[in-house]
Length: 294
Image (cartoon, rainbow, N blue to C red):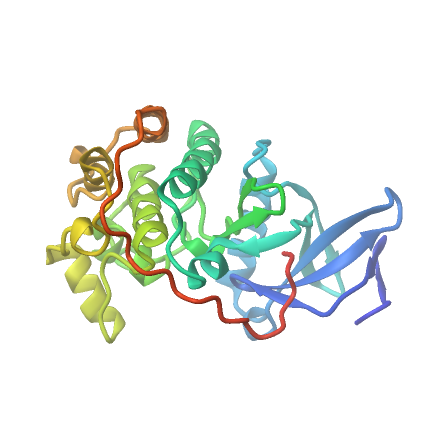
C-alpha cells in the first residue's frame, strides 16, 4: 500500500490499528496536508453491521467541531471499501503514557477537563461516545487532548446498532448500565471518564478480574477499594469527585460533563496541600515500535 494513490490520497506509512479500522498515514494531494485514512478491518469487511457502524462513526464525528475532538474531513470509498479521511494526530495515546506510571494529579485533572469539554460538545449535539478509554485518547506534543474513535457512538434519533440486551464498549470502562445491556444516555460517558481519571491517578483500572464476565459482575455489584488505598496523596475533594462520576446509579452521577469539569477546575485552583507519601513511579519501559500517530 505504501506509495499507492487512493482517491486523492497518497499512502505514506504502514498501518496502525484503531477500533474496528486499520489506519494509514497519507498525504491529501489536493490540499497538501497530512491526514489519517481509516479503513474497515479486513475481518469485518463482510459484516453489514460493522459497515453501518463504520459509516456512522464518520457521520457522528463529522458533526463535531471542537479542538479536543479528532476532526473528520470526509468519507469516501475505494474498491467497494469505505474509508474515513481524518485529522492526523501526532503524539501518543493516554494509555501509552499511563504505562510509564501514574500521572501527577494536576496533569491528570487537566487532561480530564479537556476530555470532558470535548465530550460536552458531543453530548450537546446528541452524540454519546460509549467507548471512552485511555486507548481512545491521544495526547499531542503540545499537551492537547484529542478524543478518537466514535465507532460506537450513539446519536439521538438513530436506531441502535446492536440487538437489545447486547453489551457494547470496552469491558473495563463500561458503566453498570452498559454491563447489563440496558439503554444508556450521556451519563455512561461520565462513568467511563471517571474510570480514565482513576486510571491516570493510580496506574490501575477501577475494576478488574481475570475474565470479562467477572469484570462486568464487579462493575455492577462490586465495591472497589478506596482510591486512597492506592494513592495516599489524593485529596478528599478529588476522591469525592471521582466517587460521584462513578456512582452506580446514573441518577447519582454528574448530570452533565460540564458539571464534572467545573468541579475539577475548582479543585485545580485550590491552594496546594503538602503531599503525603507518593506511590512509586514505574520506570519507563520502551514499547515495541509502532506508529506515534493515529
